[in-house]
Amino acid sequence: MDLISRAGWQAPAWAGSPAVVPLSSRRDFFVHWYGSPPSIDRGPGLVRAVDRMHRGQGWAGVGYNFVVDQDGRVWEGRGWNRQGAHCPGHNVSGIGVLVAVGKGGPSATPEALTAVRDLYDEACRRTGRALDMRGHRDGIATECPGGELYAWVRAGMPRPGGGAATHTVEPDQTMWSISQQHGVDLDALRAANPKVREDRIFPDDVLTIPKAGAPAPKPPAPKPTPPARPVVSLARLVQAARVDPPKRGTPVSYSPTRVVEDALAKEGLLTRSLVDGHFGTATVSAYAAWQRRLGYRGRDADGIPGRASLNALAKKYGFTTTN
Image (cartoon, rainbow, N blue to C red):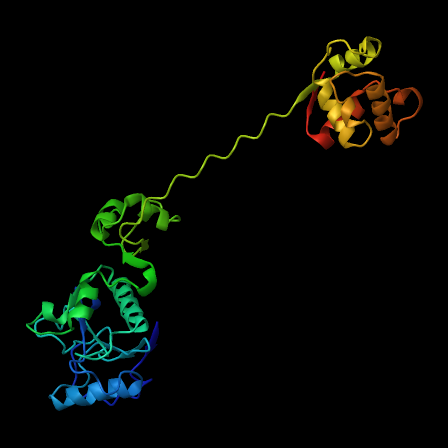
């Protein structure tokens, strides 16, 4: 929020002493318009024109707490802690904000509306409560702040483009009561505040409020269960390596042999067409090549699996070995 202080726009000294109002007295947030379209709708000239007009009415200076121009800049008038002069009967309980639009003139820009919403959220944060959103006409019989701006206030002052609103937690509020207050789904509220524990919210905590009507988030899809790692028994594999060669073409004696053959094929030591579950002559030769690749020689590279060589193959190609 681009807030320019009184010193920043070189405000003249007060013609009097506006009363100081504690933030604890604030209950309302009043939105106003200029009336007729302002001749200046942005920059320091706008707030200076308002100040001159209000001094001409016998006031101490600009009567609004803040003035928002069409560029979305906020100009300090009475500020947070001084009594306003914007709505009889509500100048202590209400914070008054002027938007630089008027009857028959351009609508408030998205930048101006965003700045008003920023002011409201900051007011709620400072006071520690959700202030009532009001137009000038809610306090006195008047057209102010005009039909379009008033409708925006009554709609909850949504941010242009759907930006997230916030809520400052009040004493005794719960996530459920806050969701009811704003008309949003409880699960959507929880999802918008993932770092907030529902049983650990306190006054002055600021929650993000999702758009009204936002659907509750879908539960995350369960993570797929990874396939179980194949298991190969060393003893049964050795038996197959000793039995299968003379029984070429007979039924497979130990089906997990295919796991070892597949690993040897991936290693480039066994032709893929020979991965058939038989620990036959070709598989013995391929396994012997694997043993030699590990540095074994002589009888230690005879093609009959041993514990160390099988574990090395299992580690590389993702299967488990047992005795």
